[in-house]
Amino acid sequence: MKPLGPIPAGFETIDGQLAIGGRTVSALVKEAGDTPLFVYSRDRIAQRLAELRAVMPERLDIHYAMKANPFGPLLEYMADLVDGLDIASGGELVMAREAGFLPREISFAGPGKRDEELLAAIRAGVTLNCESAGEVRRALDIGKTLGLAPRMAIRVNPEFELRGSGMKMGGGAKPFGVDQSQVADLARELIDAGAEWRGLHIYTGSQALDADAIIETQGNVLDAAAAISVEVGEKLPKLNMGGGFGIPYFDKDQPLDIAAVGAALSKRFENLPETLQETQFAIELGRYLVGEAGVYLCRIVDRKVSHGVTYLVTDGGLHHQLAASGNFGTVVRRNYPVAIANRLTEEPAEEVNVVGCLCTPLDRLADQALLPHAEVGDLVAVFCAGAYGASASPASFLGQGPALEILV
Image (cartoon, rainbow, N blue to C red; front, side, top):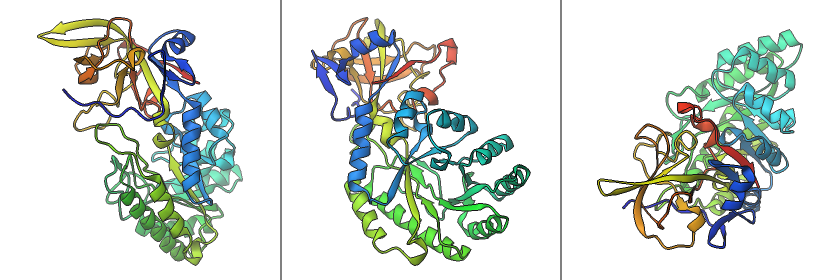
């Protein structure tokens, strides 16, 4: 038997079924029309934002990194909850504007921005988090052609990383950002060229559950930003401190202690150097805001036994939940939180493998999992499905097509 990840706290049951937004999963599937189905909870997103704001410094803005989940209705909902939006493509810029985000609320990061993306961003008036000297110079040239002063920040590749992060985005040779030693000269160049200087973006890693590691990294980010600002010779207008806040996916994972992180950051903010006294600070979070608010539902279409091993075959799979299948950057596959959604209150009764409908042995949703007895027609729930699910999975693989999505 292999343990399942922890189901996020706070989900309700009605008549033994998982319920989201006061409705059973059976009712939600009927309302949506079919499975597979992603269900995202407004209440859980709002609660997560409220918990964050209660413990973080009042002057700290919270940005949503829309790469985590760009579902249109969810984006529209986030526009009323967060202070800013971080995008990573021209396509995301279009979606952000359609969702109601104002240009001044949007910052655009990511290596390899094409000229047409830079042009669209400059014309709209969003902030470019520039990743190289070449990108800065291309943006300046495009700004001259348009007769507009680009709003420009520099993404820093710092000389440190976030310990214990799932994906390290800073320290050493990286495709992301400008090496810390080169930032000040580049900042002076763009300021002298007439760009609107918008400060620094320092993103070091993602999916960290260790509060001490995040506290340490945030301290390093503030120190690096202060040192760069002194070198530039200008007070820093804005500092996007990145994010990295993780959520528990696997057995023995413990939730991040955000109260400790908030207390340490508040203390640092009480003793800022002169160059950061008037800085606008922000953190950038994606999965932490929406990951636990989403559930992926698929239906069991077959139950079979092979060499004594029971398989529950579903109409879902890795084409919608690449991360849960273990094929999205995981070295050793471990089980996400998975349940039989319409039998949530029943006791575990058998060890089974939950698999998808694709013709590949990689299509696994749970291995050797202890679950209640389930039959054809029952619903499987994969939790922590609100981030890097639908949009980060190969929905067109084998012609299967995308899952349905609803916000409740």
